[in-house]
Length: 564
Image: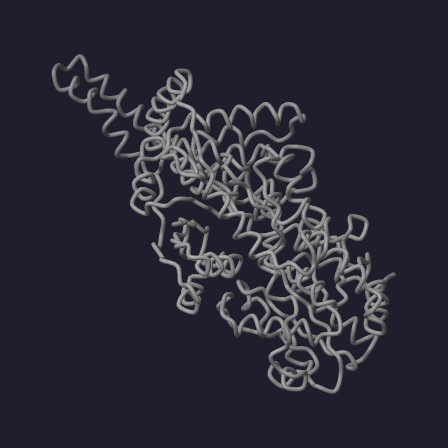
């Protein structure tokens, strides 16, 4: 079986490298393409290390036809409207991010960006209407040609849910060609923190029953299309042994080996730039006030943001940031270093990151501080709730640094207290099929079943065909308006629009007043271009102001004296 697997970025290989190798071991040919190549491009170097290397087609083409702008606008609109549902009431950052995208994606999504508050039935009605528009948008001939050239038996995409993702066109075009389709959920936040599933593939593969419920309730996926396979990215941590002894590891990262260390795993979140760094500086000061230098600290930056932590502990020999350079997230030495960091630590602290789940697999205590500056990355996301004990999670929460230090002392003295809680979470969330059963073979089997599925597509109805033709006409009109309103082309459009008036003016002097009319048309078109620029500038300014407000609030709170 030949499988065309479109990943959002090369970095997504870290979620599916074991699956790709397993499919190759079973005799299938995997053909890769990527929606974007700018992020984690170094991960492509690891393809040569695969036991069964896939064929790499590189950057996947995007649709550029007449309805491309309309398609992007409809998708950006539904991505924003979903965040107006009360389920996402606390997700202010995610809502603003989707709104900015709706403004940026042009005249088809911009009217929806003005919506601020809707009732649940209104959100449901709008989503259904936008999804009906999506179904009426025809597939892209350009994308169909790309798929046809790969000649696959199955088309997979991941994660499909990135805001405005062109992967929607790959599912739509594959379905138009009669090829089975599937989406593989890449991470634990895909179904809650990203966009809406704008088109339903034939199969949806999720980690656990919680994600199955998210797919059904938040995206309208029929339950009989869902396969629960477990979280295959974490298979590599079960039963693993460290690559270095503790003394050698401490020497490698620059920590003293004669004392235990606590690991802080930084997150990727853009919510409040710099807040996490300010918190860690204050947190380490609090540890020094309580324990002196008897407890060392290792900060592990997120792979995408190592440079944000430079110079944080210049005067503290028992606190280190490591690694300090961008590294290949798929490379084995990167994984060894990460695992050794978790394994040799006494406890792990974080705000909201998958490293906390990996620490639970290894059996380490995991703690977090519910500081107000982290509100949007914790309370403002649905997936964080799975980490909380009241929802079957394992993370020990505290609401002040003093309370956190008490919990940290308890965790260091007796780490065995958390092991059963960690194991319960891992059984439920990571390996629902059983702790002793790896998830990668189960995912490979689900993919094989999807490829063997016989798909019958109903012929397009007359109503749907008519709707498609109507959307094409709307796209042409809207595209012309959009081109006129772009500041860069406003003068050229104005010149073209005024040409008939100027020709009339040359015929006879009594029509010279029409030439003034042509100038008025030109001025109005240029004004429209300026107004569009101003709307985009205001949307960006609102998002920057929200970032600054969170950052300033966090800095003020961290400057206060410690209190319980």
